[in-house]
Length: 369
Image 1 (cartoon, rainbow, N blue to C red):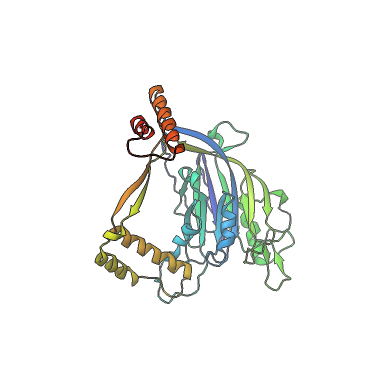
Image 2 (image 1 turned 90 degrees about the horizontal axis):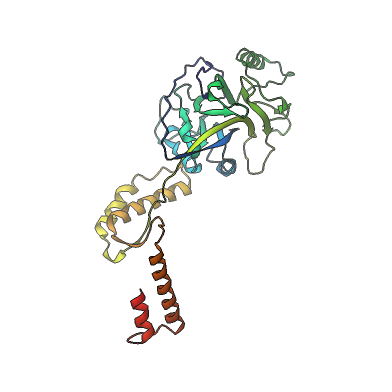
């Protein structure tokens, strides 16, 4: 792995195979605008060997509630299935690679999912994170811009920070000395990568025989930006043989929030009596033939069918606006006075049983309105 040497940046690497020589691409900084507000968010990282997103989606949903950067290994999705990560992590931006990323396969007679890596970050971080081309189907990297340490006032001092995390298929515990473990220790030593001191020897992998355990998940850094590491306990919702680990850093991300006015919202009513049945039926028939194969779940098929129905409805059924909400604007004193009179007349008319015709309360209400 090649170290990054760029000011105001951190590289976050996530791997579960033998490291390879890499190169680094440097994205350009964007310019801010006057209508933005800055805030700081501490950078925390979770790494998890998920052993299949489809089968462990409930636990992934629990992890996403923490709003940290999530590194996933073994999502077991093929390239044409990667959108499932977006569906499961709706509040995140996802960068993923599959086992077939270099030679994509079709959805016909697909084998069981294999390997795959991904990094997901909360959408509020999107403007300070960029994807890197480095890596392969087992190695993926992002670059994080505009990070500050808790004790620095200048970003100019933030250089050469690398974080590597994932399932390393090997342990850094001193008592483990097989060939692969020795090679892993040599690699981390040469590159100055180390975990936090509080990680100790708590296991992250539990063999299915219920006896053997090991510590093979790590979050490493080439300096002292990692503060503490928490190895999760086994959870009944978490089905894999691995447990996640989370590291808290002393880094803060500068988040710029655009000060935009509240957007308008419109509610429509569908006029089913005026539906064009031919267009509706033809649109449904046209898309039904592309339903997913039998390997997909019932939920996936239901989502696909609902999407087809919504699209057909949009084309064949007319609609009209029934509610329009826009940004609230301050009323002048005269307007406020007239609004108060109108509300008072309406209340008197309503309390009197809502009289009609030429009765005085009805006339006064209409005039005030």
